[in-house]
Image (cartoon, rainbow over the protein chains, first blue to last red):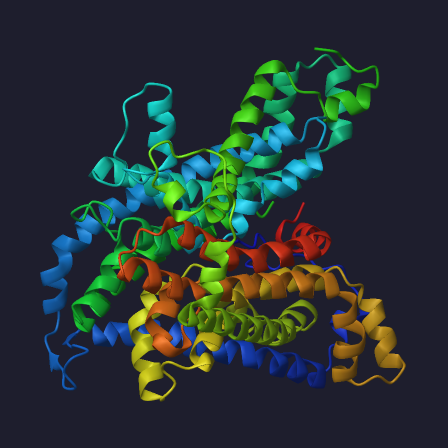
Length: 310
Length: 285
């Protein structure tokens, strides 16, 4: 499931319209405002923030689900899994980059095409939302079935038109392609909807004025529409990338990380370490390294956010 | 290509050229053919799927695969679990998130920006990172393998989205309305429940839908925190069809369809709200 909110935080306090209410916020109002925020904040601290912090602790121990006691090993876990981490990171980067680029191209292209005057626009737009609505597990099973070597419809169609059959899930490159295609199919509608919403807000007077001044269609697109679209779409792309970075279900269902470990991403690796080999310490170390990386990516995201504040 | 006389309309909504039409057709086929295949396989007999000529259209359509789903106790139990967990998630997320959104939108106090920042970053935390600590924490709290564990986890993960969506809509509410309510002697809680929330119903419905979908679709936590007894459909499907290594694709596609249908129905009913909620909350023009 992926969605993103493009609401930008008031990192630099926006200038609020001076209304009487703002300045007359009494102490009681302030207390009330704080109180109603508490349930959400507490939930978040306990379920999302505390586990992050405590996983740093766990990563310093040799801890297993099979044994009650744990032994302190310092950075031992880190040194033993670093090679694996680097390898999984490479796989994850390949998967998440491709799974971001393709839906982005497809989604934006569809939005632009569907923005034209064609019959059945609304129906198409609604129907194309379907892939995004399906749970990730369903999407993965469906594509695993389409790509099935012996009975899959893809090979069936290929042999019908006389082309050689392909074995997608049986080899490393094919398996990676398969999960990327499945993920692309799952994600493009979301990007399409965002892009369409942005296209609705295009400054039509400006575009008309430019036309009257003799701008060609491609110039209009390049100088008016494109700058308008770039901001929100970039944000969606960054978020999409981060979600894909943590993707679990697509790969777990379609390939289980195989063949070999060719599609084993960080999320899968962490799951296998923790719930396959019960190595909680090593899995936590993997998570902490990932967290550090995420902090770096997030800073980039915030930086973008601030730049696009305008 | 015929140029329309109506200049304004033609510029902002040009008609499609031939390459445009071809591209659109291809993209639409990529988008919709797999859906067709999902449905077609689900109503095909098992023996037809594995026959030599493998028809591309269901020749002898059957409902046996769906009947099979509803005769499978384990899958039925997963379905019930999914309904409970997802509804609970939607409800809790909207209540807790609604309060938070109202707080961030209309009140100023110390720590407000820190909270907002925390939620913004929280959106980016992948579930896998929390998995082990959550497992240990819930296990020591005696909450492992309960509905509660799943509901509070899924609620937390959807909160950032719910909060920012609702906050975006509440930001547009004029302060005069709240002022008037105050002058009329409505309490703060009364204002929230009788003025603010009713005004943002489309947003609340959209947010509830997102939260429901989150609970309905998640696999990772359903696999690890739910246990065999409380597992939701995604986990149930993987247990039934991967673990046992079955190749009964029609049955799997039928089960997948049953798993997807509630989301599609919800979306169709709420589509109007969904689009307006999304446009006003998530995408600031």
